[in-house]
Length: 243
Image 1 (cartoon, one colour):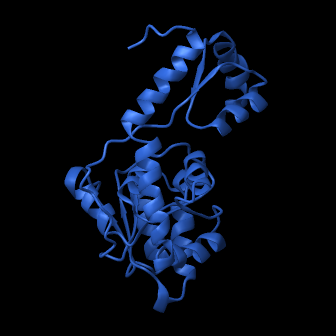
Image 2 (cartoon, rainbow, N blue to C red):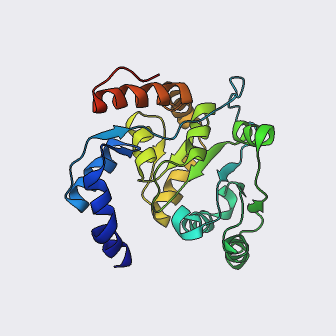
């Protein structure tokens, strides 16, 4: 309710007066038009990513990797834990979760893992950056990002750029990658994730990783994003005098 009041009182006015609105993907434009009943020119451009050209997925570590902020509800981490718990112990993969804390959510996640008795399979670690981050993504058997809602998480784009098979749910970036046969997509619920996790870790998903690397480097690199953003901006304001 508070968010609806905010949108009605303030956001709608700003949008109506905007020369253009930036969104990550076309579906967000459709959502804005439906929810706010406003049609404005849009510039569609996802978050750009930097990645080392020599970072190549090997999968030799075999583990399932998640990187991000420990916001359990938004990121679907409770769904992931319950999905792992529902997989028979003999077939459970090792799962590594790395990222910064948020409102003591990391401790809550540790408590959940303990209460579900899956500590043997699920480890919760510190944030990783730079070479260590790229090494983990390259060695992961697959990456997973089971958010209940999200938009354009950079960690998902980075996993795609390296060519790691990646399991996503139904947020805009996940829809984009799945629509290009560049990710395996599941619903954000325990049963769907439990069914998809073994598949994303299987050899059948390797082709998804190869497609992901091509798609990410074509559409999600900073060069591609900036070029597209400037081209759209020129069309919106009707001038070529933008460098």
